[in-house]
Length: 332
Image (tube, rainbow, N blue to C red; front, side, top):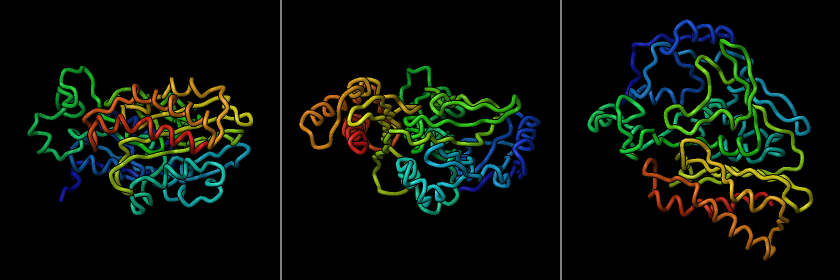
C-alpha cells in the first residue's frame, strides 16, 4: 500500500485571505488541496511533494451556490461533484454540467471531489501516473524528475493529457471562473485558464485559489457531454467531448466544441464549428445527417491522440468524429 509522505505541514484556514497568505509565506513549497482525490494519490506516488499542504475544506464561502436559469449559476469551487450530480434545479437548465459531473469516477470519490478540483486536475500520462520505483526504472520523465517525454522522445515539450470531464463542457458553454491570489481577484473565461502544455497546463498564477465557477444564463443554447472510456465508471476519459450550440429557431447562430482527453488542453474543433454555424439543423433530416457526417469528420485532424492514456491512440483518434457527431446530435 502506498502511503502519504510524513514530511509536510497541514493547514486548515477558514478564509480565502488566510489561505492565500499561507501560500504566499511558503511559496513554491506549498499546494492547496480541495477534496484530495487528485493531490493525495500524486503525493503517494511522489509525483508532487509539497512541504506545506493548505486545505480549503474549512472555507465556508467556497461551498456557497447562487443564481438561477435567467441570471446564471455561481458554484463555489468546493461544491462537490455529488452535490452537482443531485442538483435537480441545475439538471433542468445545465444538464450537460450535471452529466459531466455524474460521469466522473465513482460515488465515493464524487462525494469528496470538487468542481474546482476537477477543473484543475493534473494532466495525466501512462509514463507519469506510476509509482516512484516504476518511474525511476525508466529514468523518470519530463513532467517529473526527468528530461525526456517518453510519449514523444524527440519533443521539447511534455504531452501529458488533460483528463478532466468538466473542462470540455464548461469551456464550450462559455463558463467563467474567479481566481483570488496575492495580486487580488480576477474573473476570466474558463477557456483562458488553460495552456497547451502537459506541465504548465493552466494560466493560474502562483498562490491563486479558484474560488467560483460561473455558469452562463440559459439564453437559447443547448449543451451536451459525451465520454469515451473503457469502463462505465471510475475511468478517466480517453475522449471527452463538450458541445454547445446557440440557436435561432433551427439555425445554429454560434457553436463551440471542445475535445478533451486528446491533448494537454481541451482542443477546439474549429473546422467542425465553422461548417455547422449558420446552418439549419433538424434531427432526422437527411440534409442535416449529411452535414453532420462531413462536419464531424473534421474533428479527426485536430485530435492529437498519442500513447499517453488508455486504448490505442489510432482508435481514439478514429472515435473522435463519432463522439463529436453524437454530442452535436444531443443538442438538437
